Length: 490
Image 1 (cartoon, one colour):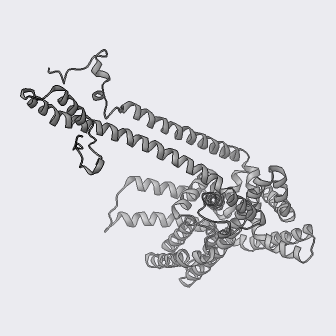
Image 2 (cartoon, rainbow, N blue to C red):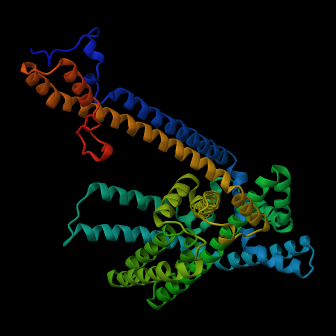
Image 3 (cartoon, helix red, strand yellow):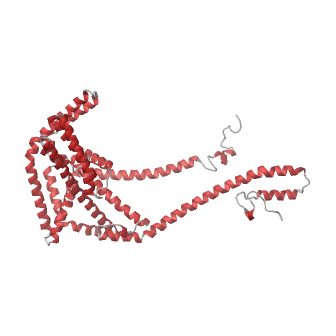
């Protein structure tokens, strides 16, 4: 074993020499430790945020009976508020305006339910049984030529889906409010929603001043503007989704009626209700219509229904929804699917319905915070942003006024980082320069001295010349001389 391959003992001086490191004085272990510290800092922050979110959702689940009417009341209030505001502008008292609008809304809803309930109850169970038969027929068709799909697992899933549809026939026929039965009585939830909606419509304008007095003027300005934007987002979602669902239900129902599909009215009603659950609801309602057409009139009619559903949904997704919703709902379809699935898995149909507007409200608050970050960094000015309230304009102007403070702190941090980088580059350059000087000395100075040993040159002159060579700056060009040369001696 040679000397270079022999392991160094702890007492060996070479163990602590620069050659023992991975680079010029760099220890890989210290770099790994620094990376682990950064990962640990991000990890505990992530755990804190995840724990806070888990606690919030856990508490919401425990008090869901009270949270559900509150959320429903907020959504209903955003739709009815323009009418109440118009009545208040015409000097109608707040309580009377809220009461009249709410009364006529409740009577209209009950009238619609009373008109369609017999049809839904009579034909809803039949639709479920026909959908189950359609699933079985589809499975049998796939098992035959030319598909020849023989998959026991798929068959087992289809059997489970068929059994579930048959078990839930009476519930599905009862309508979309079935999910409410899992969290409390329908009547209790309906009553709480009506009462809360009344107070929101009557005293909604007083909530913002109360918040500003409670949390202070600065935080109150942000809460007022953020809540106004969330209110606009929720109202825009409900009104836009209702209009989109109505158009979908009308054209799909008209097509089903023209194709002589049984229970076309009920299927159109299901399409309208399911339209309030974006993407997932439309796919579910369209699949149900195709299955009913398949078991009732055969494959040819089912294919025509499939074409009808695809055409209507493409018109909705590419033309109608962007034109109606505009910038109110800027959520990627992947996010919509994830939140709908998560809400439906946790709180059923009602959770799937509330998932998208709640996600849109959260995104609205995040966008508001992003705007103020842009104000503090100087990327935008307060006049470039559109605010919903005077408090929002005041908050934007305040953010623009204190922006130089944040910019100064960012500049100081940047200058500090640049200074550290400069010092590091200087150290690396000095080390490299020392290495180049040593290499030059070993390559040129030593042979020169050895050749001069046999000459008649005073030692003092050779020592002075060696000192001059040792002081050569290999990177600079003093007095116009090229690198690696000496200035003329005096």
